[in-house]
Image (cartoon, rainbow, N blue to C red; front, top):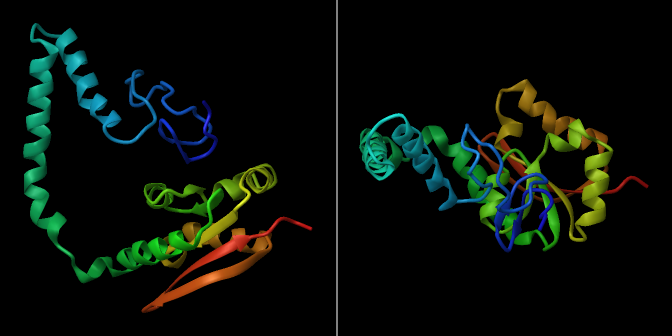
Length: 201
């Protein structure tokens, strides 16, 4: 059953217009499906099958070797993963405020953002903000017609960083479309906001 764009379905999460659970080629593994973990365990399984086909060892043995390798390869990064340095304050603030915004977003709505994955995990429909710029007429008209709860724009970390390309997605989107501010937060010199996009009159 098609799930539309980047939303939750009974089978899991689906991205873009790919039906949930549909088999599509990813990194050379045609058996992979577009869905969250545990489907991604098929990646090492697919590698194991390829190695088994090219050698005399069974794929289960290769799968065990790959799993042990991945676990051991991660160990050196444990001290870094656990660290909470000041340098990442802006992205942590973005995550914190986005979670507050997600609580206020009504059901059957769409969030345009640089980070749709966060909103997916919190149960919201979300898509890349660039879609509204690459297909300005079709994409937003489709969203306005499909999502009765409204279409929102998440002004986020990438709208504040010193990167003209990422900044342009935010400024152009707000310049091209009518909008109203729903909520706003500030952390140091960064601004985080949630806008509701309005259909053209």
